[in-house]
Image (cartoon, rainbow, N blue to C red; front, side, top):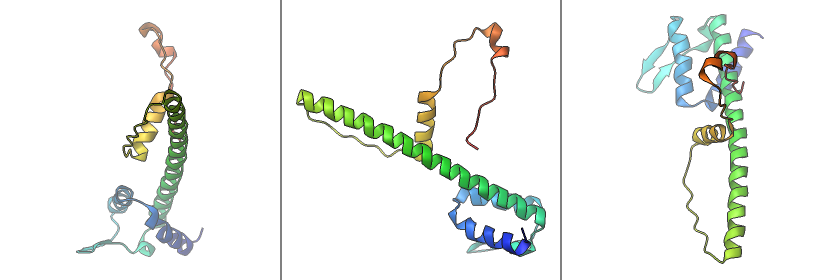
Length: 143
């Protein structure tokens, strides 16, 4: 990909990132000793002056962030569908018993929903401590 096209892609994609992700991009630029300016409006970076390796690193990070956002959205939708099924079953049980249904919805962040869903569906292994070396595996990530 040509440098001009890569800079345009980064410029267009940077608006979808949150504050923490933007800070990580700045850390990438800072550690490579590239030039930037700082004023009351924030930090300004001319991305066309960055070297090719830094641009590729930033582009890879942005792609990673997009994939992560998509995975979180997907798991949030799965979690919401489970919540809907559970609430529907509770309504049916409540209607059968003629009990009033009290809805107490709390706002839960998508990261917390993902964590709770993962925790709920992971299997607990009961392995004796002397045999644990044979059963250790790495954790699979969403990427």
